[in-house]
Image 1 (cartoon, rainbow, N blue to C red):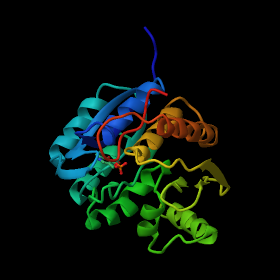
Image 2: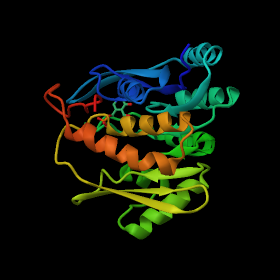
Image 3: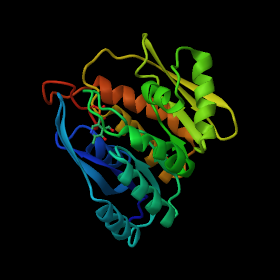
Image 4: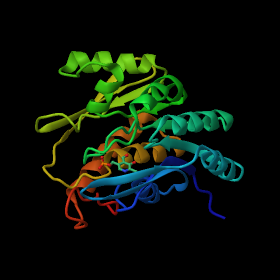
Length: 262
Ligand code: PLP
């Protein structure tokens, strides 16, 4: 029988198929890893935005963890949309109970259409309880500013934020530059040993970016499950994102999904 690296995504479902768990599973499949899913909530959404959300009852989150970890050999995991404070706390308890390694935390807060995917109350638990379990956290510029409490207006502020976020307990910190201005997108990675690496790419002018954060964090999880280092994964991850965004597919009439067949 063929051996395959196994991962789990702990995230919400996008009814229109472009973001959340739907993007995660397509990315994992593309990268040749097998993924289970612990569903943290449902969303009624399409490429125009999120119309409604329904968080999973805490007890059922625990049951999904028990089912998955009682059977599969999970090498890496990610968290995506966690919706509310009880969900964050239940996920934290179960991540600890299962001794989950190689955890990537994507601190999803607001969807591109403006809908909240994390309550303000839950942000505190994400910082104090979830980040200390993370191998890597992947905030965008907007999320990083909320987490540290100041605007990331220049290079100096970004460097300060990288260190402030690492001080919250995450081993490695990636601040994604996609939400910034300008022709170039610059992602900044602070490694566990204190080195900072920058990854630049050309900005692609398109509306079809639904699910970009989910796709990037999943790509990184796949690499970690296959035993790669963050420094080895990042350049390939950037190229993958460029291609998935540039080769857009005609689905929906708003912020359309990426092309995961690249
Ligand atoms: N819906 C779900 C369930 C998500 O997990 C996410 C992002 O993580 C989104 C929507 C937001 O996607 P975007 O901001 O790319 O539109």
